[in-house]
Length: 151
Length: 195
Image (tube, rainbow over all chains, first blue to last red; front, top):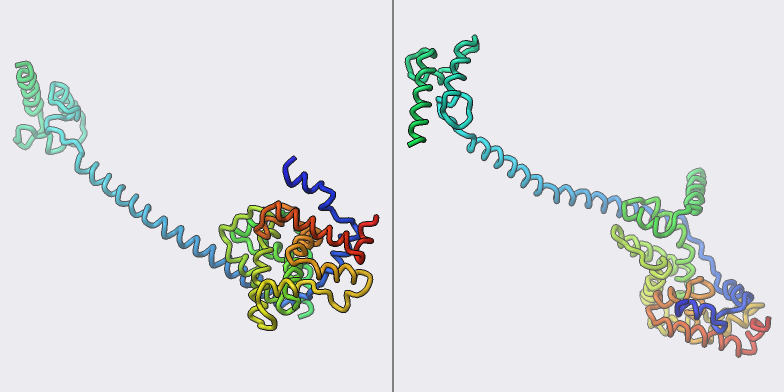
């Protein structure tokens, strides 16, 4: 039981029911509240709350504008970075595994065998035709690289 | 026009029996619900007007105070946080606005002590069955009378009175004790305690 409860139960602070009802009676003075006063108050409330909600929404929009712009900038930067840092492969590296070896010669040989259209970049020896000589050149190159790596 | 009034009255009745608590209504107002504000207004307008009238002794000034009180209250939104009873929050607002209203009206000296003497000075019509009580009440010190009325007329508990009047709880207790003792010891109001 806290202090207040103790005091609430203190007899010296209680009033007899008849005293309470008489106090209420003599204090009761009902003032007629004209309808136009209530309407004015409620209309002001409506306007105030609507304005505040609008302002809040507006400020949220304004607040969100900057992060959105920042996000857009980051997105553009990422795309640019991806484009500029796209790995460059050697012309002979047909399978794009980062090295020129016999597998690239096989890949080119398979392409020549299939009826798929061949890119001009596949013309390794620059004779205007993509054929077995290009495959042989890659194979030679691969062997040469192996020997270089080994030394 | 009369039809409109009827519609208004029906809407008021519907809103006055709204069961949401003050806290729930305040949360709703904070999110922009004007109907919730109307419910609170209908719930407290009579109390605010009665209290203002108690302080100003003038119906027109009381109505001015009613408007200003609710406009002041309205400006607290959004973001208003109710930490105690709404009456506890509204009481000092009504009191200060009543003082200001009287000052503006320049009908009487505008100090709080003057207001105190005006508050519940027994009136001619009070000289009936409850007239003696009104007279004795009018002779009580303003601070004691205020605590007495807040406790037994407005139904605030002691902690709420302390919050509303911004005084320590012990002071509330002693003022209430002294007010009741004065009534008990006065031959004109002694009979209220003879039960």
